[in-house]
Image (cartoon, rainbow, N blue to C red; front, side):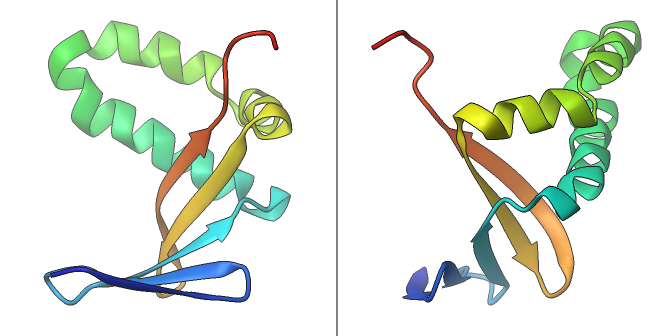
Length: 97
């Protein structure tokens, strides 16, 4: 079971395990924590498929400036559990209109 409701500019969700997640639009002040989360994902998850060397190179390219560039053209959403960022996602078109 999954439930969600919109309140202001945040989307409140309760996952089937009871975890509460709030989705909010990206704010510049969150960028450092977002980058730490992305790098952690590279080290703990993606490394299993791509290796440590590849993930180290990817981490070096995915820095604060890279993410701020993404946020300029994409709709970026940050997922919170209590006061901790637990996920991030973006939606955009990648072709010229």
